[in-house]
Image (cartoon, rainbow, N blue to C red):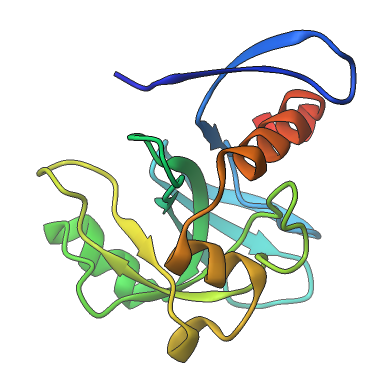
Length: 171
């Protein structure tokens, strides 16, 4: 059961109760020519000006919240190769797969979009793959540091406030 996070919002002074997760319904891609295939787990898009379709897989990015049991979870899309997507669809394996984050995350905005990350299998069979960020693969940015070190409850609240006041979090 996902823990509810209650806080007094610094933007509107109302008490909000929000889950510690944000999910995007689709990748944030400009110039989409056509949706060639879509399921809750996979999108294949034709992009204007690019003869090759783009392949996306839905994954989970978990940020540990210091002093809380539950992590802050982002349901994001990553851009993968056609071969990697076929591998995942045929046998569910993501070992060795790298993807590029294809959503603009509130608070992290442009610093998360386009970051390379390794995919790992979900904890249980049938669970979405999870992202693993590292300075070696993903570079040095705030979201990578937060993935490695965890975030404070105050930062989790700030992110939740941004998401609560932005419709774009429910893409």
